[in-house]
Length: 624
Image 1 (cartoon, rainbow, N blue to C red):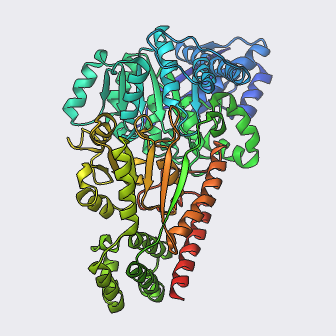
Image 2 (cartoon, one colour):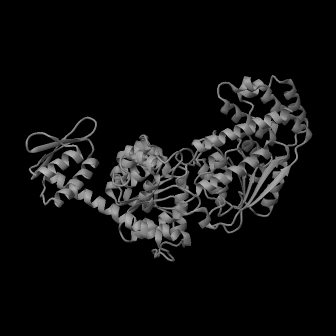
């Protein structure tokens, strides 16, 4: 029997029509019933395809069934080539499945690394390295701070020595670039020949032209849409290991631009790896794009519709299918020394308390006026103002419209002026003394506060003599934006022995930044109810490689909302750490600067509702 396919091009997607001249009755019925072919004439069946992948899958199954029936398929060259590709992909998938399971069952005491790789992996990292090597395209869902970058570079060094891989392409958030370059230098004891695909178009063009000169290319998810064709050509020119760092950025189940472009580019990579400590920010649907990037055919998770039905019907069966393709290091395996948490309780001055309580009463008595249509927004403003007032009423954000309304409260203004006559921001004064002692002892200090007015005010006044470096949202991220940027300031803090104080906002400095090699002391002037950002900020100095137990000092004003924030964060921390033990529990550690509650998924939305009640109780209590 013979078979041929005509390729018809449309303006949108390629359309394929497969014709089968079928004489065998049983096989003909098999094609019609199992694959939806229709009869064109007495001997010919026809089916229209709009997807090459689906055609390839079907052809593989048809060919296998034909062999069982002793039928010889005579295919045209195009379909013959396609079947070979499909069979190769299926073989690779099955081999990777087998290797992945074996890797997870085995114990590893040693991995033979090239002589030019100098960092010795931790014992709990060896299985992860072996998994990357034995599984063609794999995922590492280890918890934050477990050394996923080192694991990736170790595997890369082995594959490069074997000439399987030539270069690295890392797609990740901009804040991850410095971490990759620093980790590379620590692993290989030399600076990487890295190309950051950022900046002006002409500059990027030169990097592509001189691609032979670079070994590691770094690009953001946002830049993919501008550089898709150039990166595709780059992947075709060299054998790349393509890594998606923080791979949950392509989670969009319904076709986000980042995920669709990444999936397309992945088909041209020699080897693929995805990294994320929180691969499921919203729901199990988030996994489809990430695993489909690794294995773009439908053999693993099927179509979106099939996958959605499978996770709703039998998630355990779906999980079993993907388990061989990912590896995970848990928090318990890290065995990092626990930080010393010191709660420094501070008593505010009487006039300071007076202003704080009057502000609380003002919010609750005027709640209808301020609240408007969005209750969550109202309570978020309440929380921010209460916490800033606890730090120092003089640093309240005066430009907010809410303050203009509060300004009409004569009693509140009276309290503010009374405070200003003898301003004693006790938390700031006490924390200053701690900073002074630590710096005098030649220690570097990481000083956290959520509020920009605090950062700018402290840097210009109380802490000015320490020449602090500051990082918050308005500071540009890297050299492609401005010469003075977050990255440069963080490098300076780590490298310059004279710059011992970094004042930062967790929203701008909590992701993909490692400071544990130079700093083991952190001070929190304030914390919000955003537990995700708090946990991430802790991880800046509490990571693999720490040589001393980090000392965390939490400044808490007695008889204020600070106390309730501390109690609530302890509850949330236990919940979030429990969730982090399971990579498939919805959790998002990348909450936005304005999202104090971390209301990213259903679980966190429920937590946000509890937070709102907590704030309401605080306001009512202050009124009494």
